[in-house]
Structures are given as C-alpha cells and as structure tokens.
Image (cartoon, rainbow, N blue to C red; front, side, top):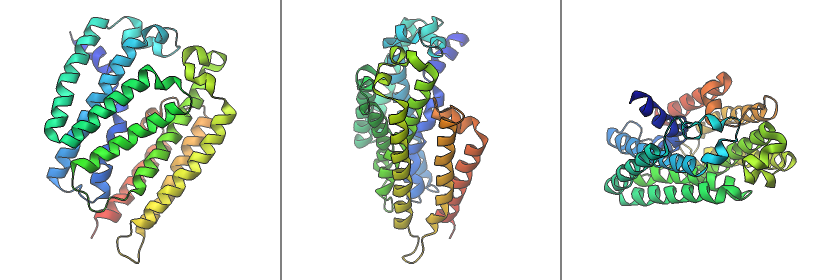
Length: 292
C-alpha cells in the first residue's frame, strides 16, 4: 500500500509543483504577503493548481504510456515501467478531479473558471498542441500567465503591475525553449521519434529564439522595475535587475555549455549558483517592498 502511494505521488510529479509559485506573484508584489487572510487564500489557490496539474500529468502518462516506454528516461516512470497499474492511475485521476474543481469554484468563481480552463488547456496540450512547433511553448507560457492571473483574481490587488504578466510570458518561453533544446541534444537523431514536435525545431532556430526571448524578458522586467516606484522619485526595484541578468545568463550557460535544461525545475533545486541568485533576488524584493 505504501509503495503504491509513493508511485501515485511520483506520477503526480510533485517537483513540477514548484511552477505554481507564480500564483504567489500578486501576493508578494502587491505587498500583501503579511496579510494572513490573503496568504491563506493564495496558498489554497496554489494547491488547487498543483492538483490540477497533477491530474493532467496522470492523464498524459496514461495516453503516452507506449511512447514513454521507448524514451531513455521516461521509461522509468511508474506507469511506463508497469510498477503502477493503469486502473490505479485512473481512480487517482477521478479522485483528483472530484476534489479540485468543486473546491476551486467554492473558493472563488473566477478562480474556478481559471483552474478549469487551465486543466482543459493543458489537456489539449498533452493530447494535440504539444505536437505543434512554437504553439507548444506558447501554450506553456500561457499556463504560467494563468497562474499569475489566479493570484490576482483571488485577492484584491492595488499595486500589481501588468508588466509582470508580460515578463512571466517571456520567462516561460525562455525556459520552454531551453527545455526543447536540451531534449534535442539528449535524443539527437531519434528526437522526432520520441517527441514529434522536435522534428519542427533545430538547434539553430532555438538558439535564435532564445536570444530574442532572453532580451525581451530582461527588457520587460526592467520596465516593471521602472513602474514599481515605491515613491514617485525613487525606483529601488531596479536594484534587483543584476540578479535577473545573472539568472537568465546562468540558465543559458547551463543549457548551452553544461547541456542541462531538460527539466528547468531541477536546475532551480540543484544548481547552487541559481539557488543563490533566486534567494538573493527574493530577499532584495522583500526588503524593498516590505521594509518601511
């Protein structure tokens, strides 16, 4: 029983839940982090996105089980390896659906619509859209924007800048393209047979797109810092720009030189320089926004 529970949790991919930290963007940047009520409701919204994304992962593993068995790393997933039965996975998916969507609508109608829309968007991605070059990474970016929008909807925001939506979009595109590049390098000539969409990409195209998206991500974040003046005459958020520059450069370095990037969430968890950069950026943001 315990072993099966561990396999179910692994199939839900808790490492991917790190992406749902974007739900907290509105809470932090609207300076409501110290509000217990706003913090609780945002945490619940993030939890619902975790459950909705896990539901999509289970459905994706069920539909891709044959292809995953041919993949060098995905073949070790519980369903592809046969350690977890398809029946158990289906029951888990039903339970997650019954819990997630009614809870989201009970918490907030707007949040419920977003969570449900996110689920169907990611389901369409898993079944069809992930096979369409460029559309695939754009859908991934839209998923991140929906997370940020959920955080805005669930609390009453007063200072949240729309530039953060734009920055989120380009940052997600940057990470998604880096992941595609890593997959092409890992699978080499067999890339298209494992993931059909990779046949529509080349390393040269992705490198050009990465350059464009990196520049745009940095530009839009800088524009956010200009619009986030604590007083009309000061722009202290500009102090966070060096951390963003290094973080973007570090990720590009890991993708191009270290041949990492297949799982961006693993980089945040395991790469010490990236951890230090994110921590220093977060600390600087909190000091600027919350110190009197």
